Length: 237
Length: 128
Image (cartoon, rainbow over all chains, first blue to last red; front, side):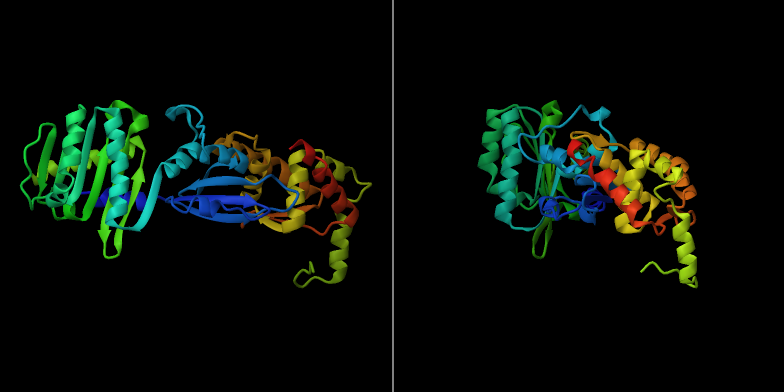
């Protein structure tokens, strides 16, 4: 179900290459993003340091490090609307819109989940799909979600392996997944209520040492995650 | 340090004499373009480089403070490089372009010319 989207994000062949005549801390700055950062030395007295964005081994764009700062540090200023952006910007923003993490524990995962729930709460409408592996894991969050649907017009769907019979709550729809992979994923996806600047999703997969996964604000990717959760429901419920 | 396989120092001296000297008009034709001056400047340091790398460095050098250079920008530069700059520099004996490996190598050049190239690029710095 979500395996495909998980692998798709992990395997994106995007590279950033820093051209600079001195050391930079860009690989640190990009450490939590799903991208490789390499450095290529420039001759002293040459161009001011710049960043080259590559996709599939091909040059996609180049931007000066001073301009890049404006994209990384608040207040972040992003040029233009989606369609007019050149490939370099598009890829860079995709990278910046996805944060990857490794070996996160349950408590940290809950904290990140609260951010998505909070964004949905403040938006007040739209669709939120959540899957905390099993329905019994949802039990401890029932009160949070009761409040969430009570105070908003949100349409909330809860997925998970059916190991607990949840009480009926207006605004909450349960989907008991039969699919084995449901049980491995901790996922929240919010469609932004029609506002593309408010979409967000978290996809985490349980591993022996904790959870690996990613957080994304990318509307297309969020839509795909929502679709896959909805599809799983059609098959599994 | 720039020894050629199988060639005597005589051969190297001949080649050095074939590269532009300060009195050579071809030298000034080479240096008349900012992109060519920058190209030579990079090669003074790196001695040998791929055409791909040179194109990327030149694109980066042209960057305005707030814009993203595009694939088209780089493609256009690559065309200028391959069809204009490299032939001009090659005719003047400055560089050798190995078309099979797509690498460019700097030929031995006189110190006076080396200095002229460095200075011409370094003096453009304040504007950037």
